[in-house]
Image (cartoon, rainbow, N blue to C red; front, top):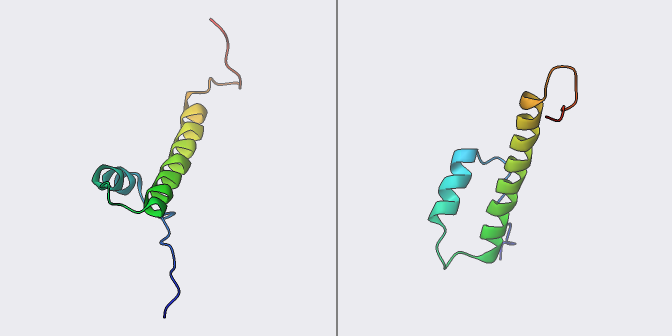
Amino acid sequence: MDEYKEPSYKNMTITQVIDRLSDIADSAQYCEIEGILCRAIAMLKDYRSIDEFINEPMGGGYYGV
C-alpha cells in the first residue's frame, strides 16, 4: 500500500483559494478544509503586510488626526 500524503496548498493563488473555498461541500474532508484555510490565512497576512507598507506615510509612522 502507498502511504497517504496530504496535498500541499502552499502554491495556490488567491483566485484558487477563493474558488476552492466556494466549492467546498459538506462532504469535504477536514484536512482539506484545514489546508485551504491555512493557505487563505497566510495570503491574508501577506496582503495585510503589503497593505500596511503601501499605506504607510512617507517618513515612517502613522500620525494621529
